[in-house]
Image 1 (spheres, chains in turn red, yellow):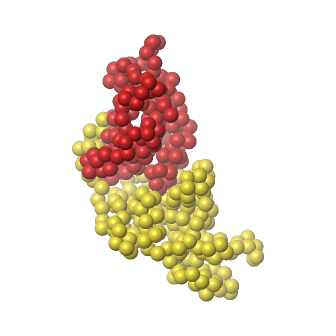
Image 2 (cartoon, chains in turn blue, cyan):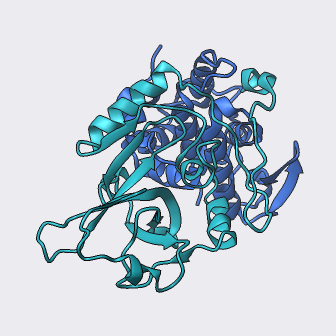
Amino acid sequence: MTIPVLEQLKSDEFQAKTGFVATAPALRRLLLRTPEVRALRQALISGALTERRIQAFVRSLLSTLRSGVPMQHDLALAALAVALEKRGTAFAGEYLHTLASLQAAEMSMSIRVARESLKSRTSLSGTERTFIRAGIVMPKTFPYEQLGERFFSTSRTFQDATEPTVSLNPLPREVG
Amino acid sequence: MFEEAQLLGNTERKIILQTRLGNTIQNYVEVDPPPPHSCRIYRLFANKYGGNWRERKPPTGTYNCAGHVWACRRTTILDPAEWTKILEDDGYRQLADGESPWPGDIAIYVDRDKDDEILHVGRVYKMIDGLQPSSLRIPLVMSKWNSTSGESVHQVHDDPYRKEGFNVRVKFYTDRPIGAANHYDDPGSRTIEVG
């Protein structure tokens, strides 16, 4: 099943209008402004898009990864990082931390955009500055549920998230 | 997630690159030649933004704009903080008001909305006449937009950043000593190219 808000990240048009940017901080700012990333964030907030769908989408993108070849959909991974950066869920944290920890020339921009997104996330939560992970200085973000009542906790995680249903449990929401 | 990428390990091939003062510059050598999908995307964005650009070189890997200007097309330097380090360590100075850029100088594109963070860097290739004889001459800049694009020659303000909403200002930097601009500014020579 294809999800339009995800599939449009693979479009030539999206890649052409974001692919010229030379630095990760600038690319992150541009991605934040794009209708595609805004639509992604809105779909996540409304529940129209689940983290499980994103996970499946990422797996499909990574199936095209080949050693020594720049990844075709690197910008899609970067866009997802930006869309997830304000989201206080385990899935979003894992996505950003894992992507940011890679050192793959094939995914050079998405990795660096994820690092920028982590910086932004850390400044949002106002937590400890850095820690060393895999030899890289990385921003550290505490789990949101440890940050106080303003960040509500939820029993819905990306592993057990199902399609949107009517539920008394609040859906994961954006913070900041 | 990302197990496939983790299995690749560290594939960022680096070269030793230092500033004049001996500070290390982080870099990685982009894959060359770029794959067909990268070339196709470059063609699309060149069509979208570069109607008046002239292509010096088709899509190529190895280096990006900073690698083009500061590393002799040998590697990619992605971090704008490294670019600033080079400007400081290598003795560049910003051109003063009223001082004309000269071929070989550097055009630095900065984001006014982000404390002048550097977005892009290109090398001034040529000065051409303005619209009228009394107009200021216009710098043509040679740019490589990213690590898989081609090289383009374009008018200094004909860049994709401002078309995508960035609040861009162009600063010119040079390694020429102060006062040298007057010496080089020959009013009889209206078109000047990189030697």
